[in-house]
Length: 273
Ligand code: ADP
Ligand code: MG
Image 1 (tube, rainbow, N blue to C red):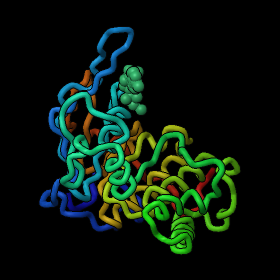
Image 2: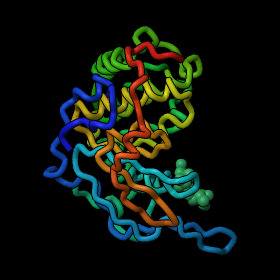
Image 3: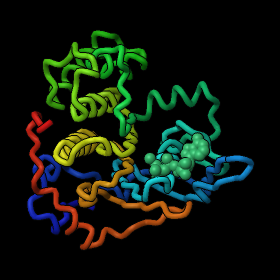
């Protein structure tokens, strides 16, 4: 899609003005074929994901819905190479990650994927600046370059001056802003976000979503997000729901868009937290 949904009366200018990629002609970034994940529990197999097929193209913003326990995190963790399929195949940027050994998968994740989690997952013993710079330095780039880029990103997410703070000094919203900066610093092609606003109040969640969308959109990144926030639906290129182990594509219906006003979001880098 190439224009903002008309059902949203006053979309955020910061998001709406960003040029959107021509996703329909873009190459496939994420491809799943017949992916199954099951867990053995007390001798009984529980099938969480049952033969999932999925195609997400470069630059696409795909939203994953589903009630708690439906398998959203399981699916994201498989796509993000954090968990192993029981059967089936997953290609990321043309690489079959289900065929990689642990070492190669670690390198692949480090280079290609950025993660934003519900509980932020910052490293408590590193400063804010060090947390953000870490993925950059893990790619073999110099500490000086990493910290320079981390400072720029921290300014982008409204956290200038908090460089040397430790994560436990920050509010939830601030920690998630740090996590967003960390997720994009090494320019991964794919960003995975698992309920990134699930632990934030509504206003803080909206400003965090704006930032995440801005930073991924402007760089043409592919974003896959599990969420319960209806606000993001107008911005999604595709919406999927997991139900009883199957993935169902949801139409971007007028109802969904009308229900999902994002008009009241303030985003000025100094969010209400
Ligand atoms: P969601 O993110 O949609 O809330 P999850 O993907 O976390 O759901 O979990 C889906 C189902 O898989 C749940 O029933 C959960 O208990 C089960 N599950 C997740 N991880 C494991 C595991 N490591 N061992 C056994 N069951 C698991
Ligand atoms: Mg989950």
